[in-house]
Length: 199
Length: 106
Image 1 (cartoon, each protein chain N blue to C red):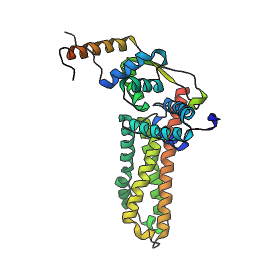
Image 2: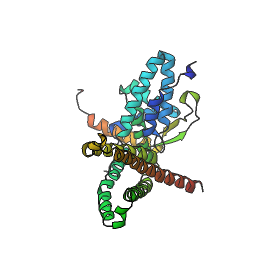
Image 3: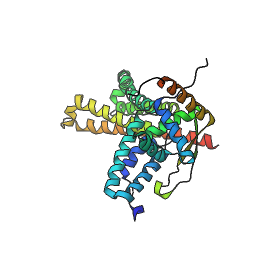
Image 4: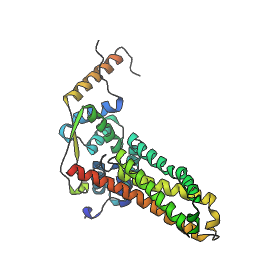
């Protein structure tokens, strides 16, 4: 019967963010074993509570390592590349008369540019932080969406108030494309490395 | 006189726990050993971080055991102290004892 009761899935998922390869995948097994022992000794409620407490303690212990801090810092810095290079590109596009004449062309070119930057950044960072691509992707996504939503809420509030709803939707699509491009670049780099190792 | 290689407090405790446990040293047992004997409750993540540092220095070595159902199909990573690890434990022990000599217990 005890085998049908498993550790809390959300806690395990959160822990795997810090404890997966190339670090310490055995931590999940150790906590699972402690959960099982606690389950037999004290019942499911105590076991779940204890598992959550231990998972959070371990996440904190693992998050303080320099390798984790390095991934967080790189992901955060890469997010700030966009506000630095996108506005100059936007103004450069403005210098071409035909770009402003074709409806949506400027936005399309801008999206392509941002996706390209995103792929290049993800490939470079995935090579530097080899083995930690998963954490890199998750952290980049979190930071990117957080920063853009914050900027939008500060400067783009008229769009949110239905004055220009289309702009808000286009921005959402743009953010999604940048994040998808980052994931694609990172997954591709990871698979390429695996193929090279296998070959 | 030759400079002795010395361990930090946490590393020293970790090596002693692994030495005591012999071939049964892994995250769960090391944590329980430290809790029982040193009355300190370390997170398993902190224990593995310390062990990987010791492994890089050549003081411990590790190998993977068999995965079990109660561990959710995950393998256990066992640790054992190397000859160089045992030597550094002795050196640290001598240094600590030398410093304690002549001191009244606090």
